[in-house]
Length: 368
Image (cartoon, rainbow, N blue to C red):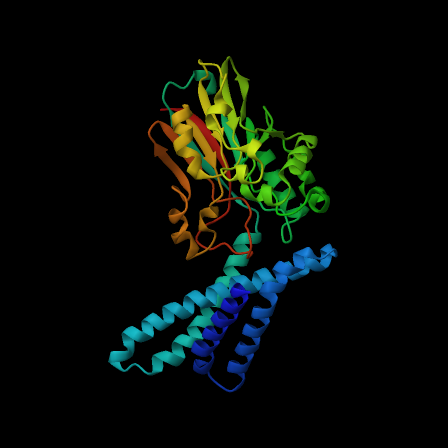
């Protein structure tokens, strides 16, 4: 209930600060109507997910998530405007109030147009080279295609995932890694929309680790469904990939929050690498959250592939990710461990991406 009151008050704040500054007589009323619709649609999107009519629930999600994206953008721009007006007040720049109100509305509209386009297009391929000391010659050029945080659910369906699968298959990678948050919903509702994963092709197969959203959606059921599709789930365990006379250990851990939902799924990099051959050329850990890196380094891994952050997904929230995770996006070094954090291949919540492009990552090991 508190959240609903807060949402209403923030909508009122935006209207109070922006509507009086809009020109003419119709514009302020139209803007007020837009804010009223937003204040209604956002909670309807969340509560509508309980509906048995999935088509209706998805329509409400689309409308509500677009409204949430617009609301959050208007809120940030309104706050920025108020700071600017406060700074300009001693200078007596009265005309700035009207001009800046129009700028907030126009800026939000432009932001939404660009953000929706970026979110809904198929993610581009990002090429990343990982230099590894003492890399066996046979593993030089070994490639992993990583996809992460697709969030198949109310606004992401089969066609969206199919386009991703087609791009990944074109890469002809040696292995495919899916680093969690694949779904937002139950198997019984989303199984047909996740089915394209069965078409993924690579030399050594497709491997999956759970993200936090799998645990909101029935992790055990999804793990069984992915195994049925031919995707190998790595639950605090590893496989040894024999490649051209050398071996690569590919391990996976459950999400760092998994034990809150299932004590048997507690994330454990030490357990994941236990029994791995000592002469392995590379030891790779798939871990949904970058915060697993410290434990991965202690366990002796060379590389960790993660997601979860979405790179912040859209401004200005990308500025705050570091408050919750050690790495926001890209390649980082922690002692002897390389950590690559994907910006994600889909999106969550508002169908927006701005300043944090989605990606399908092709990681290539090279001697270094």
